[in-house]
Image (cartoon, rainbow, N blue to C red; front, side):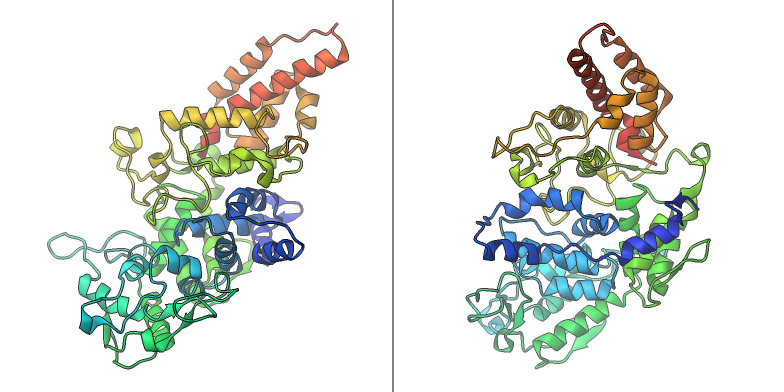
Length: 505
């Protein structure tokens, strides 16, 4: 195990999980009470500051990963999104069953997947319950479409075809479960003052009174709404697909775009048993099925991740998402006053032509930024049949937009709302001290940005480019500092635009 500040990697993971979660809603409420105007854009701008500055960094990564499984979009609702973010943050290392419960009762999810004020008492009049949440809960949030082995591969019938788990009859039965929910306070059709950031409440008079049958479970007619939801979530959570389905996606978000089935099985086993024990004896997890702490520990501490670089198969690793590339850059260079609320460019970074091509909590649909099973056409990975989800948003066009976006932040020349306040200023103190030696500078950036895995060709290109920049030893100290800064900025721009930075291994 690697040693991090006197601790093993497993001890570091355990200690990170023990840190208190960063919560947004209490912060927003305190600021609002002090008279600050929090508009509908507050969340979308400030999510960057939260993900960059927070001390609970592993939890922040888990929140981002979960936000790509249990997808909503920010929808211009700051308080709804703060509440939803806090659900993911609190449950990041908790139990997946509890997370499903909290997500189901969240106002943002109910708004997004249209089961808010979903009535189940009008079927006789021809108005059927909305099926959106029932469908996506199964297909995207828990079990997928076909039966899976523990290693994430599909089970096959005697004809060699995948075995479908459910049909539209199941969806119709499950849709009846998610009726009668509305915001807290007021009445069924209106919200109280806290309705956007407290759990939904059940109004049984609007809940479907009919029998509800799905996935082999029948909930008898007349069963109350809260009991129906609890029994439905229990039934779904008990399905054997949940462990491999969620485990594979967590691996994809953290360590591998195309995880090996044996790796998926090891992680799914941790999900099933609720426990992970590292090679040095560190125990993580409660022992209850669905423990996300044990699951993510199995993802991060898997034996295959400890191989020497030369032993790592070329098919291992993952494409680093644009948002994570920017966050790593910001943290690596200790951005001073990283207040993203003052940064005009961080309000929406979705454009692949001019921004990152990705914005946290703003995927284009419930299917996220990319599909877990995406195989990129006309690529080497595609020809090899390897999944590479991130290739759906990483291409030649988005590469140019990303590089230009990063260049502006690297050179500290972005647009700000308050131009008298400098925000997101990179600290290049260490890099400036190494600028006289291109080799030392690039070696340092290799460690800082690419984990010592920079390709030799990339290293040589950056060293040559930096060395070609003029440096006048007889110039004034101010001019020398300007020349050093140009060297540093060029080296960082080339490093953060290189394949070594894009690929995490």
